[in-house]
Image (cartoon, rainbow over all chains, first blue to last red; front, side, top):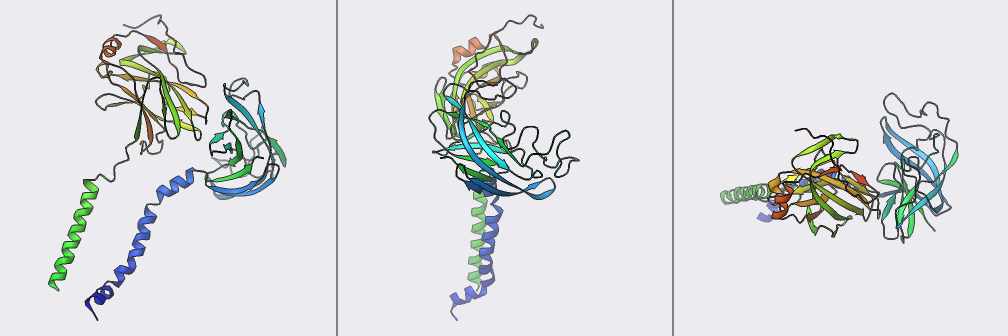
Length: 204
Length: 207
């Protein structure tokens, strides 16, 4: 046996542990990657062309643990409106050089599915994202005053509809309004609750 | 055998020494410095995620609340009121980190008692307007720069962010005159329309 072969044999355990150590170092540094992944829109749950239906099941965690929401959503049309629904003010024209675009969505879901608190955004052909302001369009995905159950919080468990509200109907429409500068070409509508998951509806 | 042991010991000591240098001299664990993009008053500073323009800078002795003169606050030094237009260019963006930095590198946060903006948020391509008010020592005014970036609510650092670094154009003569200012303005925060500062006269000023 040569001296070199003896060295490899003598240190075989350390050599075998090197890939494990490398994996451990990589895993311990992965929080940066997790942070980036979880804070962006990186995982498409479902998609559909305009006029088509995206059937989606979104697995997520609420205050009580793992759960999911199942729903169908369809982009009916994008329509420019004259007035923008500013929060706490009368609707008013958008600023100069900016359009108010209503995103008309059709929805279908069982009344026990939690669909409050979503975000809706438009994406243009250069990847720029324009979001519906949650103050100005507070109910982007559910009917007003019939939004269905809330996420569990405090003493409120799963599937509880707020006092005084009727159950959500099985089908409904929404039309959140998004501010978009003139001259932008919108190609997609995104809908999401918890990043990185989103639903993509293409615009034709 | 003895020679091999000596070699191994030397190699381990060398590795420890290199590790020590990396951890201490190279300061590998300190947060990343932001990347400053210089600008001036009336110029648009283009950042990777948005545009920033300082449209007006002026001193004040008092900033009065919109709710009434009796809530006016007097500067400990001099108030510097910085009027800014921001426009997100890629996605809706909050500009959370607003500071003044003087010629000696000292940073000043927005004044809590002035009641002006502490941050500003812009929709993509939709300008937002804000007035930031800083209470700074009168002898630190010359060479003062305004810095604005996204910042980070979670980690309280600028962590390599792109940062607008705007020279406010305050020279020694300005410093001398701003020192004696008796101007009073109504406090402004953020708006979707351009902000014009409104000068007011206080009815009653405590001695």
